Length: 170
Image (cartoon, rainbow, N blue to C red):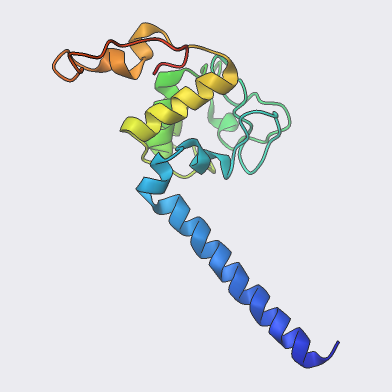
């Protein structure tokens, strides 16, 4: 192959890399994309089903698991935990997903605690989708108080539609 062909290939790879990076950035930051299958944002760094660690630890079976204990993952915040680690439940996951920097300090009991995970500022429907996906992949149904429709007031619920439990809180 001649050097002209190599130069064209290098340019294509450089531009292709930029396109991929830009696409990932848009998907990461765009709320509409995040809402359409909100767990996709989490899957960039976490696995939910195979138990393999990625940049972040696997979230397979996270509900009911002690923080910082997934095998084979090196947690930054583990050194800051005072006493026994907390157990992950929906409330703690919501706290973590909204403001990780604040949550790691509150949950460890150490104002200097840190984590590699950036704050996601997830709330509302996208957060409900993530929790539902975690329950689904963990095989754990939500209690009635944890289901999104149970948290709505009577005025917010549609009068003609009855809430149902499909085992996933929807």
